Amino acid sequence: MSARFAAILVVLLAVLGGSAVLVYRQQHAREPSNVAALGRPLLKGLAAPDIASIRIAGPKSVITLEHRGKDWVIDERGGFPADFDKVRAFVLEALELKIGQSEPIGAQDRARLHLLEPDKGEGAGTLVEFRAADGKPLASLLIGEKYFKQAPADPATAAADGRFVLLPADPGTVYVVSDPLVQATARSAAWIDRSGISAQKVKTLEVRLDGEEPWKNERASENAAWTLAGARAGEKVEVTKANAASYSLSLLELADVAPPGTGAQSAGFDKPTATIVATTFEGLRYRFTVGKLEGQNYTLRFTREGDSDNKKDAARLAREQALVPYTLLVAKSKLDDTLKKRSELLEPKK
Image (cartoon, rainbow, N blue to C red; front, side, top):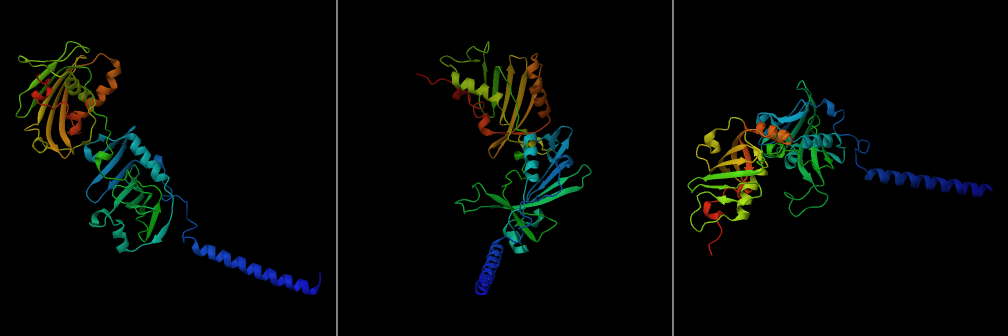
């Protein structure tokens, strides 16, 4: 190799080396400032077995999910059962949250992204606290606005790509997580176990609507046709409507549960919308008091008498009995077929 060629090679290596350094610097200039933290757990150190309660505080309400024995219950609803699967899924979501994009944030932007504390009024977010058995916080997370990769037509109803969140211990940094955290709400309706009442194999069904003529349907066996008690000449109950009226009582799924201490007057039980009495071929007697309509839900209380000899019903009956002390909320659509006027049950006259 000549001295001249060797000198040229050295110059080329120097130029190539400089170019490599330039490319490296350009690449790193485009990388986020928290590249070393990307993909790390957001709630570092949080473990599912340590969680004894979850407190969720929103701008308008607070809910506390407590682990009691094998179950989760809602403290603000008098220990009403929470949906175990929803609680479990939410805990797993929290454990799997990974650090994504992060940026410094000031008070004004925190308000714009609804990342202020729940008691701060406009711009407040939702605070989630995971607590140990002694009540001490294990981890906290402030949840704000939805995150979208592309602007949606309607942000309120569109499915988000993630969520803006903030760690209360580091209020100067906002994170984007890829989970939309839909379940992070303080509404009890989103957490209750919706398993409701199931009055099966109805034998007689009596309905008294406020201000209307009462009616009673009955049948001799499960496969027999329904008849209207006290039917007048030419009156005949329409089979499909009679079937729907009784069948609805076997699928009374809950919409929500009222807070403890809800009075009879505030729930409308002092002047009920309707009273329903159903007896079954199993020997059970259900009595429902339907209160006032609140939005799309009726308030409801019920009692049940009698025993079933069918051992398969034991779990269902035990679950129903646990609901008796509560003021329940049931969707209006679930009771529409039962709460019909007497005239609406009849076949049209030819």
